[in-house]
Length: 275
Image (cartoon, rainbow, N blue to C red; front, side):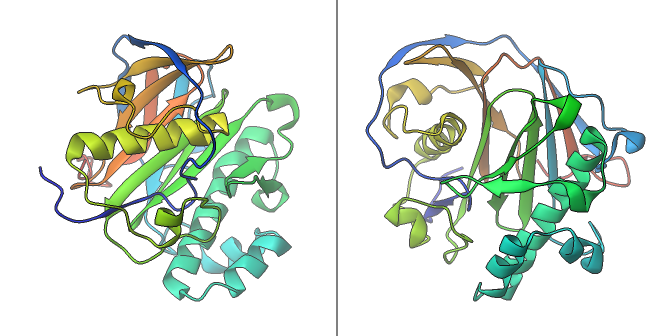
């Protein structure tokens, strides 16, 4: 489907602004299993134990049905509450609250505490990081926003998420380093170019640096998953994630992934949510 409008990267995914590092090789990865599931936050509700070769994803809307409003605000940190109060757009502030609160619901059962005790600290790109995972270390997390959708990822390995959406006002609550993202607009891109930008953004978010140029041919494959070998010891697996309409989403994981548990990709009636 041609993309006639501009696209914008996920709110808390930093677009690369630093010098690029060379790509050594790209190898196609074996097929992985994408398992759509109903929305659930705790293992008691069907969330599996975190495994090295699996990625856990959640997709949900910023609605109080996801989590009660009072409970959501109660588990946020003082810094997050201040960030919400200073944001000029109430709808986007609400989305931030719901995303951070649900992320704590997801992590609480994994590390054996209540959601309010899950300590998150933002990195320089605005991505939340789990400060202490106890006996469950390591737990890596990522969050991205795509219009009305919030996407959360959890892995035992370094992880990055990114999305593109049709043209919207600046919807970042901070953390973007690219002028195009801060203005909320990017030049119109053909689908393959959009996919390349999103894949690069997920990789840059995961690696914490610009690892290759945005328009690198290495990211323009027709299908995923595939591996990218960059400078250094890590090999990154790039996964395209199914999303509604013309929304694009990608994940980068520093380990081969054989299964993705995708919570929120199946509705309450048992049918797949638009993907």
